[in-house]
Length: 560
Image 1: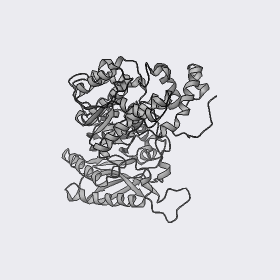
Image 2 (image 1 turned 45 degrees about the vertical axis):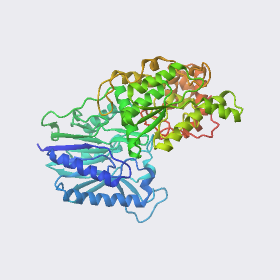
Image 3 (image 1 turned 90 degrees about the vertical axis):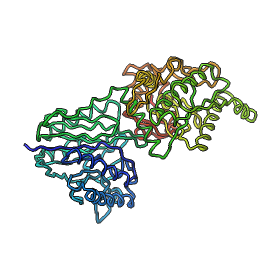
Image 4 (image 1 turned 135 degrees about the horizontal axis):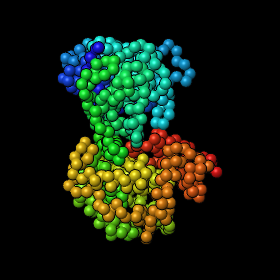
């Protein structure tokens, strides 16, 4: 029985940074060589980053990817790593003599290559192109049609790419027919809540279908709205878990396999995070990478003394360090003394930078020129606050973080060009009830230091913020329930309507109150124009506002 030491490089790439990504491949190949690996594999589209979206349709970008691949193969050999086979994802194109109508310009390919001895020895491409949820691959790629099988250290290794595992047939069936000893799958599979168990079950099922062990390497890191959690795994031909990498961190998973079935010795099996830890880690990683990859060194946010801005400030402190977080306290004539004191308490607990800018004089100046009443007067305050933090952003180069949660975005409970103004929304895909859950969970982790937790000496979020009734504080005695249903009733309806696409009758049949359903549907449908103008934020649910859920702004369709 052949023995193979495989290394899965679960690493973080950046879209468009071909030189930087190539350097990462060299660095982690050197680590794999040092660990005595016979084969090292990198994620899908490693060389270009993922997703490249319409860059795939730009000939200059495809050519740069092809050139970078050739240079990478030679560089690996020049640096003494040419004897170690490397599997890496990149962007390629199919040579076509005639462009067919409906085919993506240039016939781009989501490709994988085997590098060895300074050369690109084998090339293949993804067969199944996903065209659902956040994926538009059928629009920008053409399908691959080959399944490479390469003998490494006496083991026949077949290569597949991401969606090829999720669809029946194709490379999995071909690997079984070819009698492969190992099916290697390179992936850029975005994080969603509870997806790790789904992936593991999928890998186990496909390994049994292929009749061989399966090695699944996944990307890690944030890219705009998407977060990739890693969680790379190796399973045996019987579907048993043999090795597992930790989530949300770069890691080289090295395993000794006696193929086709069982490991030589116990392997590394990282424990998956619990539910709230997983979600929180995704938010931190998504925020950190958006800040870092877009060239920012610091962030600014309005700190109101409420739960949403408190959680956003905490995520930011965990992501980039409290010394790089600038909180602006913007009390108005309607701000309660408790809210101001709570915000100041959070600043002291976390050690973030803080500045107080009272907005009452600014509001009075506007009121002297404009005769505004009711909602218009309330929104004026929110827009003045946004002008303050946007001005400080321009002056000092901070990225503005918004504090809106998914419940507010769904129902339009925000001020356009006010609290919705900013560059990134860390809790954009987090329902209000989950905001409270995450805040309480984060306080239980006080003193812990992990790749996604700052070691605060005391609970980072004051208890007073956790227990207070939510309010925008834009008029005397204002409460969220003056404008919205109780969140305990609202969020379940939003989950079914937004994430499960249930219509009115289905919502009522599911047990939701009919009057509540009608009210929520109306709020959600009328707020589409606001959501289109909200900044991106990390996707953690099966259907986020942005890449996932795409509805027309102008529409007369109403659920009845």
